[in-house]
Image 1 (cartoon, each protein chain N blue to C red):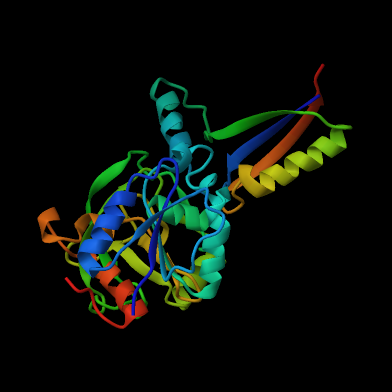
Image 2 (image 1 turned 60 degrees about the vertical axis):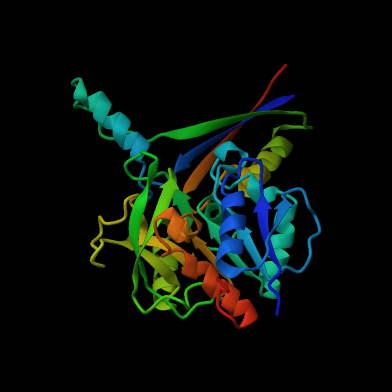
Length: 237
Length: 83
């Protein structure tokens, strides 16, 4: 079975080509770039909202992109079960579009952070993480200025109770305390999934560490997992 | 013509690292009477309308739809006529 994949491009997206390259290299499949002005798109199996600075991060990160014509289609596809992953700015857009709960605030230390960090895979029973072993500790880069996840206490409890916190920041040995998140994220949250299990947002960039030539491939298994969820097969490469 | 001003502030429960940094800077040269500093933003919209109530209702709609994220922010609206 094929896996029809789109990478949405907003003005200011800058990880779109990385996502296309990484998706092709990891899964052996194809991926099409889709411009944000499209108001009608095909029934894709997978949609990737890439990182970057859509609309210059004006007003709030992702707030203006949320009103791009293509987002009505992304919302339509989310309802139909398409696997949707928002990476970094893509995660911010998904929260602004209310496809995921919570919001991403300015990093606690104010600085833009660009470095490799460690993540714990808290839930490997998802369409986005099935290739990871339970509680795996993985190294994946971050690059963001607004990645401090916040949500009201009731919303946090719901995420915790429903096992929808998929990735948490941790140390290399897998341990963590309340100050481990480099950006001040609540409960060390780095990635969450929606109730239906088909929309995931994460601040770290799996596509940036998905091939040996990039210095590591811990990130590839996110794409492998999505590809397998759609096609029933692992990545071909 | 009216000027609608939307003042947006981070919720009190939300960490404001910019405000905290400015607070430290102000205190660093002796302003020890400062209790806290919070930073927000102000959006001015020049708009035609029938009366203040109508413009206020429009501004509220824009705040709800785009200008403000209620998960992390609160807002107040001020409307005044402009010649």
